[in-house]
Image 1 (cartoon, rainbow, N blue to C red):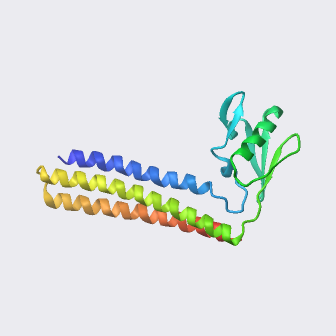
Image 2 (image 1 turned 90 degrees about the vertical axis):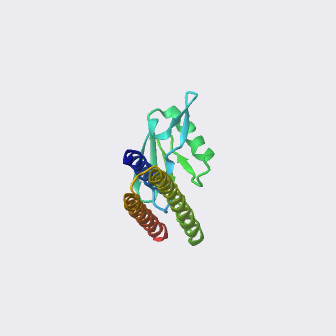
Length: 187
């Protein structure tokens, strides 16, 4: 009977790990006043009629801490890339010199920094909700198995084990958010 618990347990741990990775991914997209090609992740460019990831049509680099350089593999893509950046409404202004596109990251105001911290904390809370939902699934399975004859003391041990794992994931989320908040608030 504990086979059911073990199956849901391992599946839920995978979901929890995915929640952490998703949070990491989302946090990299939050601007901190430093140039990072991650800001442009998810940006699609019209490449001969097909929406294509920017990283598939150009080389992205950061020559310094305030500049992102985009070097398209085909010069014909310069206009498409520029349009995609404007359309994404990232608050960034691309500068096209005919060879490359440069984006200068403007410094963040104190108010904007505080807004970004709120966004980061909201993303952290979403990740915690996801973790708690997985905990609930496991707990429900354990309770159902106890009703079906699984030893009650073993069920309690499993519940304690689940709670310990959930707590560790909560701590990891808190550390990620704390690090991002420090990064955002550093001038």
